[in-house]
Image (cartoon, rainbow, N blue to C red):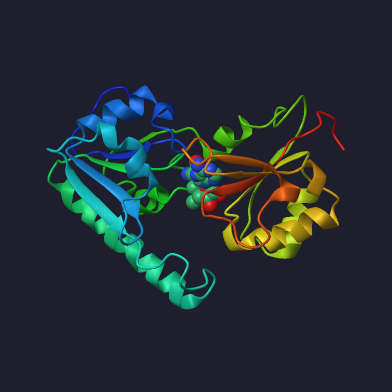
Length: 247
Ligand SMILES: C[S@@+](CC[C@H](N)C(=O)[O-])C[C@H]1O[C@@H](n2cnc3c(N)ncnc32)[C@H](O)[C@@H]1O
């Protein structure tokens, strides 16, 4: 769909960027303000980072639709019980959003960073695709807010940059790192000790940077060797800038 005009009964995926409200795009703000319903993913007892980031642009008259995760870190993500719960949660979330779209009310689903870059929005989108018009408004991904803090560019010349979820099994993580000139490791959290092992095995620890809450008030940039020993917060990542020389 042409993303320049607002359309009723449309599913909007709104990228809210990494946390600093000033990093929201003008288009994200405009479409968000136009939608009568604002949906956002959150854990129990909170509003979620995307909602916080966009809050100054959400009016009292807009209906709020919190989509509350049934679990976050209580159950290991690979186990069948978690997969079952989370699939049902996304089915229910898509059904709630569809209820509004069927009545012609457009829904803005907020997504931290970019909606199609590991964003929960995609699970609603994939379930409703083809049934309703949709429009994805890209957002600044967190990794670029992180790389903006580095003392050197994340990629130069022909560097190949690889994005690695920290949830990958050890062997896959090592293989992905080996083929990369520059790398971004997301979803760090409890995986930090395994990430450290992989970096150490490849002699990359000294080149790596640890970043917490990029573009938020408590933003932190540390050489990786000064990163926390064990678990890292949810909003953390590891960046390895390239050299500009293919290995
Ligand atoms: C499910 S992914 C969402 C990525 C998001 N859609 C994007 O475009 O950046 C969540 C992971 O992104 C990273 N992340 C998101 N926002 C961050 C921030 N402000 N600072 C550091 N890491 C962040 C963390 O690694 C976190 O575990």
